[in-house]
Amino acid sequence: MTTTKPAPSARETELLELAYAYSLTHGLADLSLRPLATAIGSSPRVLLFLFGSKDGLIRALLTRARSDELVLLQKITSQYAEPPGLDVVARELWTWLAAEERRPLMKLWVEAYGRSLVAPDGPWSDFARSTVEDWLDLFKSVQPGKDTKAAQARRTGVLAVLRGGLLDLLATGDTARVTAAVLRALPVDNSPAKSTPADRLS
Image (cartoon, rainbow, N blue to C red; front, side, top):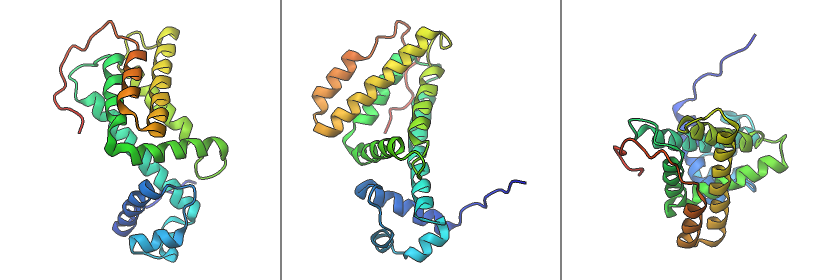
């Protein structure tokens, strides 16, 4: 018999948001409950009560980070009346990823991605695979001939270009150089968007 986890309390939600903001600055690899609790106006005892363990808190923070990613992916596609094509979406996505204000989130994502590869049995488990699937699902939804092997290879290539560019950008901060390289490497979609975005990504 399975049980449904009760909805988080207002206090749990508040502390998770505060802890998430803290993790964007301090990362997760060396997360210590005491300084975190002090920074967000709580205590280690309360955090352990709400999240079960330090690993439970990390899992909640990773889920919170992934939710930001999913909101982004949905926002990109929802601004078009019709599927805009892989080329358009890839460029929209890079614009969002490369924005200066998103560096903390992107660094947290890279940290979690790497940790999930080297510690697959820890709280990071499945993070890397899940994010790959999220992005590939988005690309598939806007791609002509989405079920062919060629289409699958193309969206995988686009993902590789974007993520490789992101790593370079985070390492060097050279937005102009990396953006030029990413846009040059992205394949051109021969089926241009049939509509204009109603809103630009904020």
